[in-house]
Image 1 (cartoon, rainbow, N blue to C red):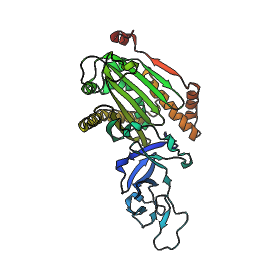
Image 2 (image 1 turned 90 degrees about the horizontal axis):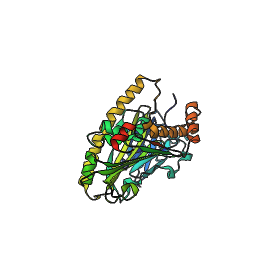
Image 3 (image 1 turned 135 degrees about the horizontal axis):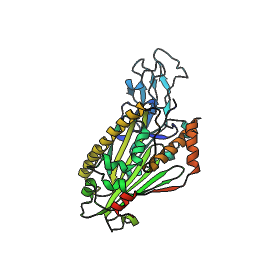
Image 4 (image 1 turned 90 degrees about the vertical axis):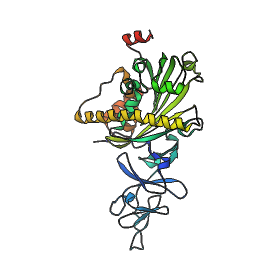
Length: 375
């Protein structure tokens, strides 16, 4: 069965602080990789299988900047070339393991799993908020037992906050408010404004001002699996919808998912803010609070994957609320179609190209509109 993830893309493989002068194994896109930081500070990534007998190199050790296989002692440099074989003066010239292109950026280690000739560092997804001094925050990694695309679906449709996260970041207004979906050849944006509402508990604690608020959620998707969500609240009437957010609080939820297998993924996330930048207590409280919120998603997504496994022939039916997720899937399919000959992906890619540059508005139902007063 063909894989559901494109290989010609940058995937986050670890937080930068995780890679030290030690062997760090991880599986990305079904490929076993071992990473380590060289004495010059640069990170390298090698295929985690010795050329000789395919024992994982991560079971060995570092000797300077070379990896020593823990089985027979072959040594490989940072480029994957064997530099030593026991009991031999001549090294077989074919003795090498694959070396993967690496970029360290935005606090993450990014790997290119496909054709190395196409590995342009300029294509690393934009998550600059994660190390921008104008923003403060932190995050974690979740090992999610689901297809990475299910996490993309989840993040592109935040109406689930009403039902999954009602005690923290969600309330009825999220599911009821209209939103716009804009799609281009390489991005999808979902924009939702909730005006004159009661702030949910999390945002009420951040704003610390009484009265109704204008709340925004602006979701930016970059295929195959990076989503930056511009979020915040401001007191109603202070100009946030018109562009003046100075009286409110603003954050970004940064998300990038790296497939491990067809049914598991590494989910890297961070929450960063542009207020109270020097307050480490707030950073810790928000990080741990978001950890609890995402644990609710993790449970739902694992259960959804089990449902998908139980119904392998079931095709998802798209509701109006799925507009953002649908377009994200089409852009993923477009990348897959460029890499392989598969009719499913080529049809979806053709649909995406025919409708590029469009925008769709999803309105509340009449009942919702009457309750919200938006009509």
